Every structure is written in structure tokens, then in C-alpha cells.
Image (cartoon, rainbow, N blue to C red; front, side, top):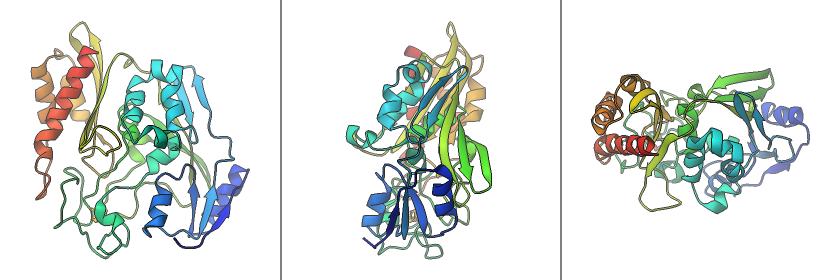
Length: 326
Ligand code: SF4
């Protein structure tokens, strides 16, 4: 690991300035991803700005919305009584991620900002446009069974690894950000970006911008929800494909739906066309299969991940069945 400076400011503005003024500085909170990346030489920041002293760990139960501080631990969010009652889809998604030990260290903000687990990104002997722009993409013609089927480019076909983010995009969350030019709010769907020609940029955050909280508005999706994750072992594995499903039912008729895929794109993949398709339909397997066909429009596989073209719709149908039966 390279040598680096370490600072631990107690003021938010000092933390932001420390990163904004230094292109080689980065924030660290739980460190569950960044420390691995530094040990492997994938990232080599020259300054770490530890934000753990900032007062950003609160979970506020406001009328009409939950406000979850960026430093709230994943385990604390999933254990919070009101989060469990008001946003059960979010709780299921968090608990599907990583291991109990990691959820006790990982923060809400860090979970959103974790980097892809593409093996070529981690292998510094291989070309990777995300790690080193302009070197090429090792996965394009390599072993790409974990990779994207939506929204990729010829520069990068990686997928975003967060489970929590799949629920947050389905739940219309908003990210609160503070930066050198002030505060702003970002719709969760706009936080992560597609790779295009600049896959080194995972998000739309500007240099020095710090996520301070995420807001999740109240919604009618408090009962019929499911986060269904398909992975290669039962715990501590990233999704091959996951599907978040939330239904608002009037008897057996669907009044509204929220759907998103994980493990299929460079960002959590919201399925708005499939959501609209389901409105007014009966909550039956046939409806769910038709919605899954809508969801898969535009999907394209690579040499080793063709199985995702079948796994993804099947995962969505299973998640919808789980949600309807919940
Ligand atoms: Fe790098 Fe993206 Fe290609 Fe993986 S898919 S090797 S992260 S450029």
C-alpha cells in the first residue's frame, strides 16, 4: 500500500475543503471497499479525509419521509424500527448485502459509492478503462459472466454492486449532497451514471462533494415488497441478478408498482416501463411474466453472460410473486 496522509476533521466544511482542494484526496468512512482497493493498488489516494467525526449518523423519522444520515451504519438502518415499518424493501435489500460484520462497518453513503467488483478492475496487470482510462476493457473479450446486459458502452461493461441502491432507486429516494459550491439534492436515479466514454466516473458527484444523507419518501409499499437476489452462494456474494419489487394492491388488482434490477448495469436499473405495464393488471404470474418481458426490452448479452437474459426475467417474476404473497 502507498503511503498517504490521514486527517480527521470535526467540521463538515473542513472535510469538504480538504478533498475539494486536493485531487489526490478522498473521503473515507467505513472503509470496507476503499481499504481493499488501496491494498490491491487499484486506488492510491495520497490523502484520506476520515469523516467519521462528522455528525451524519442520525436517522430522522420525519413526517412524510425518512432522512438517513450518510454515516448511519447499514446494520443500524436495517434494525431501525421505523425504517422496518415504513421502508421494508430497503431493509430487505440492505440485509441481502455483504455479511453481518461488513454491515456493522459499512455506512449508507459508502454503500452507494462502492465500486464495481469487475475482476479486471481489481487486477492491476489487466487493462481497465475504469481504473486507468484509455487502457482498454479486459472484460469485453474476457470472462464477462458477471457483467452488464443494459446500458453498457464499448469502454466498460461493469455492473454496480450495491443491493441497497437497487431499493433506493425503486423507492424514489433523494441524495443530499454538500460541496464547495453549496448544498444540492440529487434524485437517486441520477446519482449513478452509465459508463459512456468516461467509465472512470461512477457518479454525478462533483470533486469535493460529500453525501450527507438520503431521504426516502413515505409510500404505500409497506407490505407487498420483495428484494430477490440470485447469487452463487447464500451469503457474502454479489448479485448475479437481483430484483426489487414493491406492489400497492387493491384486492388482487395492482394500483402501483416499483421495480428495479441489480447486477445488470453500471447503475441500479429502474424498470419504469414494466411498472406502468402492471398498473390495473391482476397480480398474477401471467401479468408478472408479461411485465418481465417489458423489463427485458433492449437487453443484450456478451459471450459469457447470456444466462442473464433468462435469469433476469425469472428473478423479477419470482420477486413479484414474493411481493404479492407477502
Ligand atoms: Fe474495467 Fe469496466 Fe472493463 Fe471491468 S468492464 S475491465 S471495470 S472497463
